Picture 1: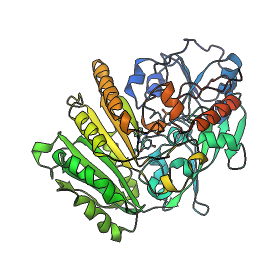
Picture 2: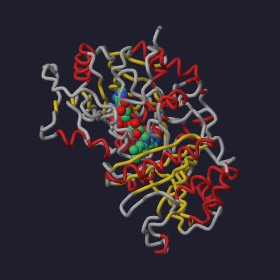
Picture 3: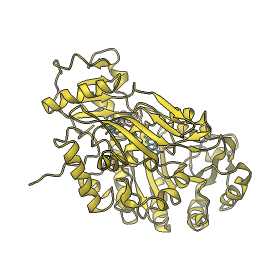
Length: 472
Ligand SMILES: Cc1cc2nc3c(=O)[nH]c(=O)nc-3n(C[C@H](O)[C@H](O)[C@H](O)COP(=O)(O)OP(=O)(O)OC[C@H]3O[C@@H](n4cnc5c(N)ncnc54)[C@H](O)[C@@H]3O)c2cc1C
């Protein structure tokens, strides 16, 4: 978004391109450039190449490479930085490539990069399966996977990258390669957490797991004045939690539900979002003690389906509002960190119609214990919790106020936050942050070296950028 490139008309755009070529003024241009991040609409790209297939992707990359033009890539359009549609840029739009296949015998799911999480869940659940991924249906599988992928199944089955078996990739010079545990292994390592830095991924293959269809899920809503006490008891309580428990804590305005007293509607509340994918008959043993950590205003946890459970947050995730997103890993959920988060809830500049939420996701289990830190570019070392603050508003004149609030919160959380992190669930925080987000200095150097092999001229630079290693 902030990174703009030279405006050009691309009058020499390759004639063999079969998909839609959209320029400013074309009928479908405005709809095509709309992203989840509403601020991206302030500026438009020079050309959106909506690819029909991987040959189209290769044609654009050959053209860009030959002329040294940087390229942006749009998967599902959820990236909070809006890097998918930078002002004046050439964009490879993958949103039309939406094939998905599920092999119930091998439990392998193959998705093209325009597939969204809700579509993948629906396709896999037809066979009683699920791929561990994120919590909002409209998120794209591609960007989510390339960054790491966390959600309600991460404690049971790991991050999305831990379940990635292979990718087809079009290189910046237009060749098709496969990356998996035996072919192009360094590239495969980098694709599992290093983002869209190394090539354009045209297919992703995942290991799916039996999940549901019945699960127990919903929300436990506590008054905000119980938040410090409940959160203070939570870590110790969860020390023996089963891996089948997915838990996201949200501090957000209470919804206007009839079972909640009117006085709390639209006022901050503590919401435990619970998804238990174990045997439904055993759910009470897990959920009741969580409710007993305080005196909930409402217990909305009930038997439901995996598809419904994994889309319950859609209601608070409307497309197209202006937004910012900050976050990081916590080694512990200390009282001091909780105090900082609660203090900032009191100062969030939200106006009617705006949406904010401070989320704290419970990690541990498979994502933390079953995979070595150096096995993937995605880092998880030392992370017990993941905090994120997301704000959404419509009025451009509120940008500065929200950004200031998010920066103040980030600074106040810095002493509690690890230097490694999850790149997808925060805005790009600059070079120093990018150097640390994947973990050790050695991992960063390895990523830079792989970048130098696959994208030496940094054509794929509209992203949380890893600069190619230089030889001088
Ligand atoms: C409301 C909301 C909820 C979210 N919930 C979760 C969650 O539960 N769990 C989680 O892990 N994350 C979550 N995220 C973060 C999400 O993983 C990232 O925003 C991710 O980048 C989205 O991918 P996308 O394809 O939709 O986005 P895009 O904006 O299309 O892509 C983001 C970036 O990924 C790269 N990219 C995308 N596709 C390709 C490709 N095929 N080849 C090469 N590079 C590519 C590009 O650099 C692009 O700029 C959430 C985000 C939002 C806004």
